[in-house]
Each structure stands twice: as structure tokens, then as C-alpha cells.
Length: 353
Image (cartoon, rainbow, N blue to C red):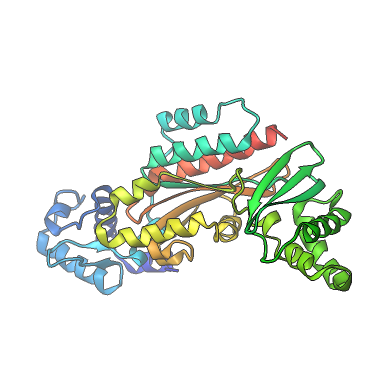
């Protein structure tokens, strides 16, 4: 990652202003910015030739790039990182944006999933990007688990929690499962599950399988060991990772980017990256910005991610909200939107217990 303070120290006041104005112009229009445009916006009146020399120096530093034959420049990923770390002016949350977020979260329905779905729709609408909302896991202790065969390649697991919450999840079991192997797997899990959350059960289960492998039928062991029904969230009606506004990215992309962006959404649909997404957010409180290839999740799409975790009443991180967009996102506006939304979601979830 760029050492923004060091690079900024090496630049004189004119270079810093040219760089800042150029990046701000690019973020506003998405187009290369030329020296003539900059002459009209700089505080100090200097010639276009002088500005071109400064732009050439910034290009040699790896901060700018020339995308076409035109005289205009755009910031590189390194340049954007330096701008975000050292020059970005984050605005106060706009009053109308605050009202939209408050209205979105003002529902009284008991289903947290419905509330978070509205949050995602509002974020994508306000930012013209795609939104990601990672819902919290249900952390109540498990009371009962049951497997039901639906077809040779489809099964249902019914999870009954101690607080009365019930989840039905459709999943693909390992090949060769029979009703008796499913009963055996359910009996094994129920003997371990009562009083434990899913996360606690997973940790205990690994040790128990090693200790009791011979007692378990091989098919039942495979079903239990796969864990797919319980913690990969695959196919469940209550989504953990809610993605909204993908059309915003597809509409804004040129043809060269479309396949990469579709690949990103395919990955999200398969929910491969839920754990990675939360890991990104968990590295620290507050909003984090990932630009292009810095972000192992979305580097393929050439996009930026602005993400913030949200916490429960015990100050434990339980989920995250974020916005994905092109690297020319309006960071100054989107950062306070994501920050405020994350704080409000955490408060509402805490209030609901």
C-alpha cells in the first residue's frame, strides 16, 4: 500500500494541488483531465505547459497514467490510494441522505433480513453502486436439528433454536445418502447441539468426529463432516450476504469490464466470499476503502469497495455493510453514508436484542 504521508512530503504545494484537482476532476467525470482544464481551477495562475511538466513528474512517480493518446491523465490505483489516505476531504453526511437512511431503517417488522434488504436497496440507490450487506448469524443456542430427504441430490435441514426461531435450509448432501444415514447424522448432532450455537457446535463436532468415527456410519460421517447444511448458508431463504444494485455496475461498465463484473457477481451468488468480506471489515472499526487490486475479493472487476462493520450491544462485530463501484467513486460522499448506515444498523439490531 502507498506510503501517502511520505509521498506527499516529497511533493511541493503546486504538485499537490495539481494532483488533488486532477483526481477530483476524474472522480467527478470519469474522464481524463487535461492541463487546460486544470489551469482554470488552480489557485495559482500558471501556464498549461507548467502544469504538463508537473503531470509528467506525477506520472513518473506512478500516480498518474495516460489512458489514450490524449493529453489528459487519470490517477492510477496507487494515486487513488494516496489521494484517499492523504488528501480526501470527507464531507458531513448530507441531510437528505440521512433522511433516506433513517426512513429505510424505520420499519417495525420483526424480520431483520427484511430490514437489511431495504438497507441494501437504499445504499445502491443513493450511491449508484452495488451494495453488500452481511447479515448477522443467528447466535441463539440450538434446540433440535433434523434432516429431510427431498430428492437424490436435495435435502432439507430444519434448525430449531432455543429462542423459538426456526430456519429451513435446502442443501446438496454428499452422494449416496439414505434416510437412515440422515437420521444417524441428526442423532449425532442433536447429542452435541443442545445449548450450543452453530459456531460452538462446529468446533465441538470436529473433535467428536475424530473420537467417535467408528461409531458413525461412513455416510452419516460424511454428511456431518461436510457441514454444508449448517454453516455455509447455501440455498437458505434468509440470505447472509445480500447484494443489491448490480445493474448499476453493469450499466456503468464498458464492454471490457462486463465479463469481469459478471464474474464478481457469480462469486457473490455462490457466496464463496462471505467469510473474506467479514474479515475485511473486522480488521478495524470504522470505514475502510479498498481500491482495485488491493482488494482480494473484487480485484478482478477493477472496482473499489467502501465497507464498515457493525456491532451488537456487546461491541462485537456481527456483520458489515458496503458499497462496490468503479474506482472513480465519490469517496467523500460515500464514506459518511456507509459509516452512518453501519452505526444505525448496529444500534437497531442491538435494540431488538
